[in-house]
Image (cartoon, helix red, strand yellow):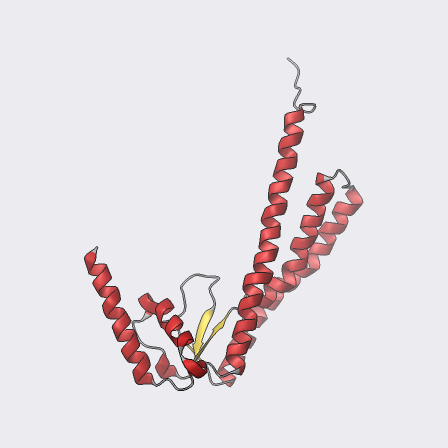
Amino acid sequence: MSNNTATDPSSGLLAKLNLIFLIIVLGAVVVGTVGFMGGLLVENIERLSNDNIYVLVSKWDIPAFIGLPCFVVIIWGLLLRLLNKATDARIQWCVNFCIAPAIAAVVVRVFYGFVVDGYMASHGYTYCWEYTSPSAMSPSVWVKEPEFCISNSGSVRREVLSWMDSRPNWGKDVSVEEVEAKVAMLLKEWKREQDRY
């Protein structure tokens, strides 16, 4: 019995579909990084410049942008394979090009975390673990005054931050008592919902 998989047209089609799938996934990563992380970065720079009541700080946004060319070059390499234009030299160029941005992204991530923490503290912000999601990639939340970080409010963190966003004048006129009252009300609603189940 001979093995005809090398000449089987369906195996070539499957390989092309796999390449197309990978290109779409990596393209989505690039678009998501630019659209979501870029938008969040711009929004939070604006929050910081306006002395907002809180600022979301991602320690992954700048490193992600530094590593972004690597994803673009991988997409280029996959396109070359899809179009049967890939040569050993071109693929090696793609690999070589990816090394520098990938290493730079990792190195920047390590130092960026320390720099961001110091920068936020120097601008009068305090890290609030109550409002920060426990997910590893989630941005950390920094509040203008430590008193705005209300204890035991983690289960309603999204609602609290949305409420802060809805305040006029970037939340500059919000008092600690208002935040405490809002958190207490949200927690009461949350507990009532939990008791129903």
